[in-house]
Image (cartoon, rainbow, N blue to C red):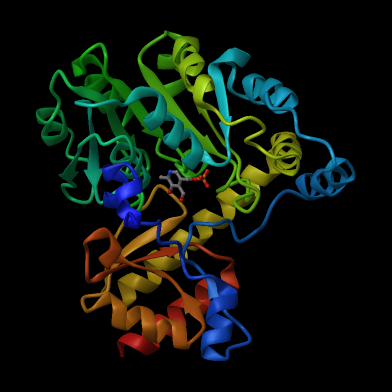
Length: 365
Ligand SMILES: Cc1ncc(COP(=O)(O)O)c(C=O)c1O
């Protein structure tokens, strides 16, 4: 009888399942706790727009039918929201799925990708899936080292990833820096700007992705409804790119990949600008509070342009994680990103933030 590894493509054996943030219910079960706060997966603590909740409830009436595979209404609304043509968009079950499509549609034997490290792990997963090497270029001062990344570009480079702001560090690359990269990349190399935290960034030097895409440049911007729109559980995100790139991705898109509840929630979210304003304001307040408290504790952190903070706790992050867990606070350990004394914490409500800081103080004292 053939072993299980004999029946698959060999590169699949190099893939490891994604490690998600620890779920609240699991921590409650394991530690016998009633009250657990999760600040581990960069979710929005305010939850979705009330308009989105109402629209999703209404969408339940029609779940016997398949959704519109084209995301017709959501496509129209998103195109209008961004000021792009409707055929410049591809929707996915989260930005994750669009990253998967990028791999499947664009990569084949001999192609390479370049990305920063640590950064979001799914780019490498997409290249490994296609049996293509990924060049992981270490961050410099917790931000992309663009010079070193460009040094890895050759005639085989198919995609160059900039995670902006970067996950897990929250750092930002300016539009001028990105434009210089764009000018330097070979014609067949797609610049992938992962802008999952786009709405949180408040640095005026931030991206001009939509302008470059409208000019037909070789760029895709990845956006999501998981973060500021707080629809992570429904799974909906999208890519914006020139039409000829979207056409390629559409060839590999699974039919009905974005479910009808997600489409309804995302559509309604776009009609509530208050969702973005409220969430930005909460995040600004949270950041200020974290900075003040961490300064008082003399802990080093990286100023963030996103809804999470990268903190050097100066000791084994696993021990800190476990001790925080026992106090009912879930964060992310830095060791999964190759940084054994760091943790990443998502900004919460005021109450959750106080809970985290109190717990951290206890754990480190
Ligand atoms: C940088 C980055 N890109 C993409 C994603 C995936 O987002 P989605 O929930 O839309 O799949 C995440 C999720 O944490 C992320 O941090």
